Amino acid sequence: MKQTILALTLLISGLYAVAQQKNKLSAGQWRGELERADGNNIVFNFEVTGNAGKQMLYIRNAAERLAVNDITIVKDSVFIKLPFFDSQFRAVFINDNQIKGVWIKRLADRNTVMPFVAVNEGKKGYRFKTASKKPAADITGRWATAFSDPGNERVVKAVGVFNQKGTVLTGSFLTPSGDYRYLEGVVDGDSLKLSGFDGGYALYFTAKIDDAQTISGGKYFSSVGAVPRIWEAQKDAAARLPDNLSATRLRPGASPKLNFTFNDVDGKPVSVNEQRFKDKVVIVQILGSWCPNCMDETVFMNEIYEKYKSRGVEILGLAYERTADFTRSQQSVRNFVKRLEVEYPVLITPVAVSDPQRAEKTLPQLESIPAFPTTIFVDRKGEIQKIHAGFNGPGTGADYEKQKKEYIAIIEDLLAQQ
Image (cartoon, rainbow, N blue to C red):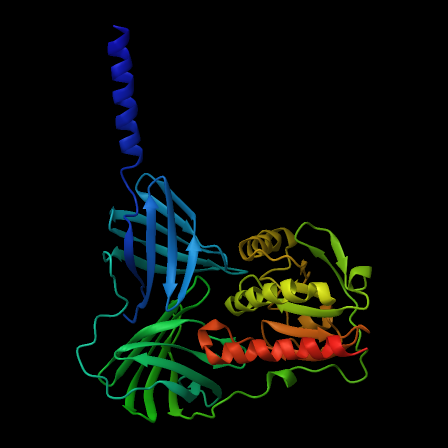
């Protein structure tokens, strides 16, 4: 009798376990589409590894793989919380190889919500269908690019950097406020398609390749409801943006010395005037946990800190979040710091990023904070020497390497000063 009861108990437990694990994200290469009402869906890829007990998801854009481990499955639903940018997927299982739901990006006063669907494409997967036509041209190189909005004469100058191998296209766009990170796509005849998604950005670019020197009729699609921007480009090996070291300045007559105290992620006040920063070269990194370019710069700043802290370099991060609510900002910034393993202090300013007086209220010496990130280089005397707006991340290739060398040259020069 006891053996019968034991057998029944084991059987019921086994059936319960099967029921609990009925739905799972099958391992393989998935293709997702963020659905726009106009049909110009933003395509992205992710890879699922492991089993239902311990799964990992990697969002892929060209050479980048963003690891996601916060995956919860409840009955017929799956919740995927992205590690950055306060966004997540909520979906239901159609089957183990298909899910459908919404991508939610939390903003200060509302949520951006886009429908999405994702399908497991197997071992290889794809982003855009294999090109059926021979490329009209090889567009590898630098392109002087102009973005504009329909009905608006204002033009934003940018630089396109592309790398084409056959029909496969990767690259990015450099803008005055930073780059569009890793983009991946195809060249099909005279058409190009590029997309990127990292939880913060959701981007899709199309255009016509007129020839090896001209790209026209470009459209840039982003979040739900947004009217597509227009873009065009001309091949130009010398294309570059204005010098970002002069994008923001000290206010006339202002003291070149910083003077601020803000709370860190644990609520402890930290001042730039503390002893640990005295007689040191200090880098003040203006950032936001919502900012993809800030993530790229922070990865590099980690390298800088590891290399130069023993030589007298300190770094302070100042986070400007979507709201002035410290408790809400605290969790977002803490996740940012933990995920990127930041070893230097990151402080949370009491001013929302959207506040037009964010500079006056926090760093009154500055005329403005024009871009995120913005980086302030301070000498051993505590005086501001250089201010750099924006950051060209690893998705820009050679421009990223140039950016790193520029920062290192500034640091070496400040260390050499007595």
